[in-house]
Length: 323
Image 1: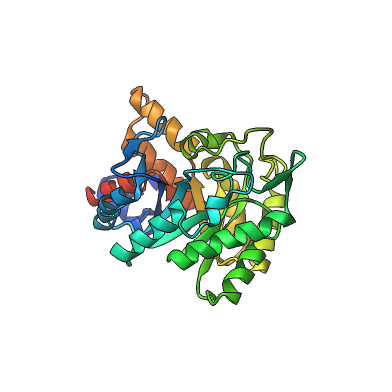
Image 2: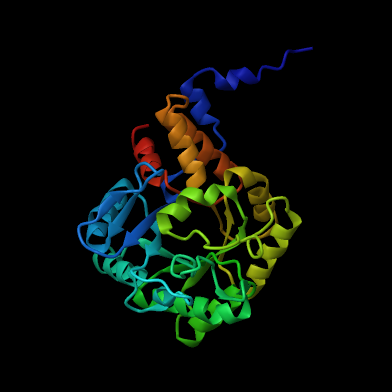
């Protein structure tokens, strides 16, 4: 019997590259950005090395750098000047996200701008909807979420990405956009968003930590997989153009199952806790930054993601250029 020799295809770098099955491209990457009020602000975010709070006047240099690197899409998160029980700045036409979108699209119309649609950064209680007697109200929150999406699109957003996990929010946004003449604008739904421990650094960066309780009554139980498929199916039925799984690395199996079942572009969000853990290990000399970055992003794409939202987008694009 002839000995089988799979190692023949691993003999050298040229051979390994020739038969490589999964490749992360720049076109796959979306860079998250945090935008704040004020001027001349570029402040590194504690716990997230290389990520910054940016005032709108500082966006130009960042967007120009991303474009020069070949990154074609960003997702924006905003920190408001004021918070109240109803998250009023989220849907204020002069709000921070609305200002940021206008500035980017005026200067860089070729950059695809995705906006996170949620109320948690804007509410004084830190939850993703209206709260009454300690309970997050679903149906009463939908109009505010839909109005937020509309103001983002009116400002120039190309895609809106609802992350609140309220039931029916994709349908509410689709109706709101359509009746206002924005039938062409896409929705990337955070269809499968788990109540994860990986969000800590983001909540600190965005000032969105709940002031009471947690989000387990609306974000998904990390133990559930069949439920993920039901959530994705509902969003497809309601009009989502793209789906998303969040977080990514602990849910590669979910990415695969969603991708296999639904014929829509699928995003996966490598979230702040995943990024922070890697960066912390790199700083301690335990991991090689480039090797672990490429390995983790490749695993996300291999699992089935078409779109990768990651704080490594800029670094990954630089790495690709250097190959």
